[in-house]
Length: 511
Image (cartoon, rainbow, N blue to C red):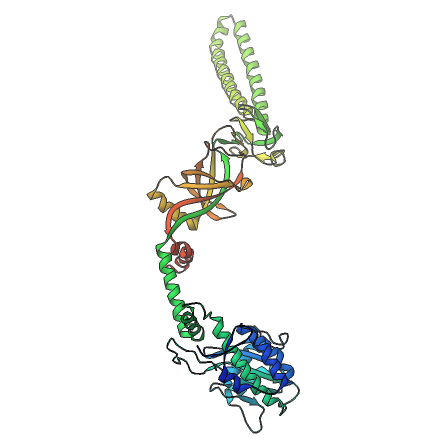
């Protein structure tokens, strides 16, 4: 480490360099005191651009740090007018990178000097948004030599940044300002070198070589890319080895296992609904009544027809009793046969009336099981509405019996579940009721539905069922929403991170 004097911040400065920049300018001496009070390179740059603007009597000063073959804007005395993410800053960075490739000062306009084509175009683009009249680019060098363990110099002075001086109203700097600029740049170079050197924590054993390595990585794009690729490869290799539980998210409802739908036994019109949603009913209880005008008409027709036949039968019997003469007895055989026909027709009408009465009994709708009505707005939906035979009217669920989960798995994820189920028939499930979110419960898949269903949340989905009758759930409300996770073994982190992307490619590109 070079020997020299220590300032108030504990920084060591090369005595030969300091003696080379000593000046009798009070402004520069004050600037030197302020700029040497920080060990943060960014803070040094900010102090420099803020303090030099009134000294150099210009409109704006910017400091750009070298990054590889380019430059990056670090500080500007007019932060409102130029921002790091703006197009103006991008144009300035491109112009500085093209203007000082050899590390020489550039001032424009300057007599008969003309900029080459590429820097000239970049300067025109920059002045198009900044409206400048004069620009001076002063390169900054690494003046403090980096020393190895045996005090041998391992790096020559290189361009580490650039100071950009701009004016919006004049085309050149005042003659008395040029010596100030030279002295200020010398102090700034020393302060930046010290700040960068001590920002690497050189006093901690072993960190000085590490600081040199990171400095090289920061300045060299190739090394940065290589280090990034190496880090990425290591990360992917580790992700392929490390295994984590693979879970498939699904959603569904908590429902009773025993439930029945009530169907219309005959075509007709609903004239009375005796239950509402959530009403408790017993098996055989009347819950609705229908009316069939066709059935009523058929009953009236058959009843009238039966009355006529019975009157004809009674008349035939009376006629047979009055015929006692020999001639009448010959006629009585035909009358007897006619009477037998009437009796047979009467029996047929009776059987038809029995069938019609059975159909009439079906106009009274009864509960097939004991349970709770789960059809919403049953009266509004059914009352005075014509229904067909076999049409569903109401649904009844038995809350006192067994309960189950009905979970829907997205069709895109059902393949993972089916593959795991072939290896492990008992697939564990963790679920939680949305009304009791902090609590989780465990169960197993009992069966898989034979067909796919369509749900608004998951689209086309597979239904699975889990028996939860033995679980002590805090509440059992029909239709309670459930969020579940199917435990499908363990997979690598690489699979967990990228399997959905790979499946997307397989679906759309048939990979």
